[in-house]
Length: 37
Image 1 (tube, helix red, strand yellow):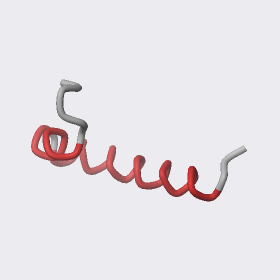
Image 2 (image 1 turned 180 degrees about the vertical axis):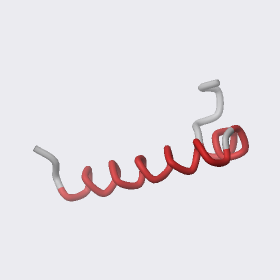
Image 3 (image 1 turned 120 degrees about the vertical axis):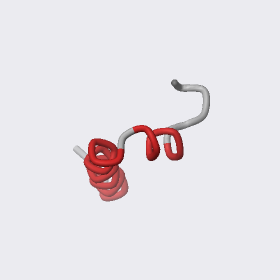
Image 4 (image 1 turned 180 degrees about the horizontal axis):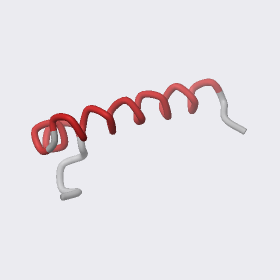
């Protein structure tokens, strides 16, 4: 079961993934932790 906080993080992450598809590398390079690519 999710706590409310975890649910919110999941929603934000899902939105982020949507934007990532739209805007691609620009967003990825900005938001994703440095060194993960």
